[in-house]
Image 1: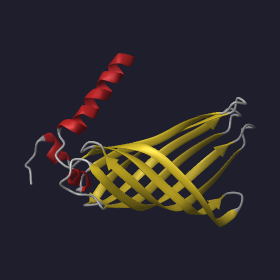
Image 2: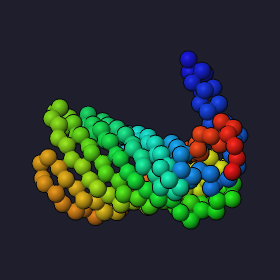
Image 3: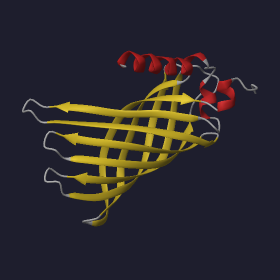
Image 4: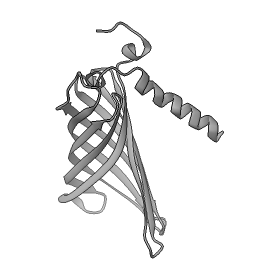
Length: 189
């Protein structure tokens, strides 16, 4: 079963490279972007934490995307967090004819979180957060990225509304699937 999943994953990823022409196709309306980030933290005193945050965005018009992510966090003291994160964004600063190179994305995301502590008690909160992301295409359909956030309007079930300033830098990988007609072999523009 494990070999089958690896084979299917490699086959799916090969489609991103085989059907690639240029970066510009990635941001045309009708395309889809898959991505995600995650981490595993281990300390010398035995504490650990882990997070996994996959997401998908749909290009509703050239350069403009609407997306949603889900996420999960857990740690060695049995705290858990589950997240749902809708967002809107705009891509810019890329050479549409290039097959590799940089791209930028700015947007606004919301996040709704449910916390479950080590005693099984739960609470919820959310935030509204602007973000900036820098992508570097290593192939026309594959781009590692860095996303930066620094301010949020927070709301919670226990404390009302507030503004928080911070610095969060996350790293991830994204895979682009341009407009379906182009990938399946429809007419080229």
